[in-house]
Image (cartoon, rainbow over all chains, first blue to last red; front, side, top):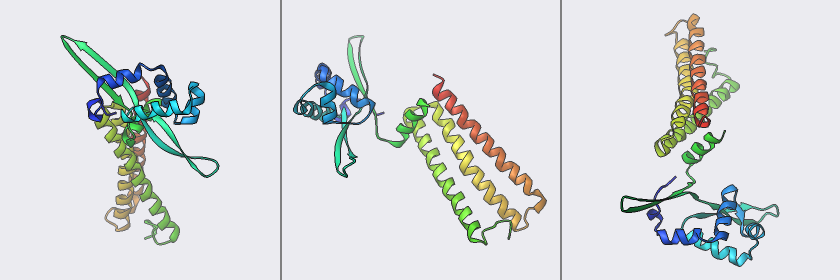
Length: 119
Length: 107
């Protein structure tokens, strides 16, 4: 997990405004379970694909969602989306504000660590 | 050289398979070690140690032991001692992995 939101060049306002949208939250929840295509997300969230794409673009820019390709049964490939947001933490203490986004990573070592804990 | 058994194609394949399993096992052990460093996850330490014992050390012991016996540096009647050492390393390695699973899921 890579901590720190600043690393991805995202500011707090962007993250908060994204999370303020209930559809964004459903996209993040759905894609945290397993990779899903824009069509699947559209069915699930009851939104048009263009609305889904608009949100996915903002989420990808903020590095909260990542794209992957999935082979289809007809031999073609389709783009699927995976949530990278693991934890968002905001701390206001002693006159100071700090925040942190923990992202899920694609690193083998991190995946092994997560997988091992799930057994 | 019947002890080493590399003389036959099957023996050679067995040796290659053993080497390959050592390499893959050590690769997983290495990733577990990286998981320990990156995530400070205690269970990864034991997984890493277990994999290294199970695949790295047993492999080394088996190869070195057989070599020493084959070249008569170690008398042949000590073959079982080498086997015992290999099995013991395996048991300890597996115990480490089992313990790692326990603390990984015990929270």
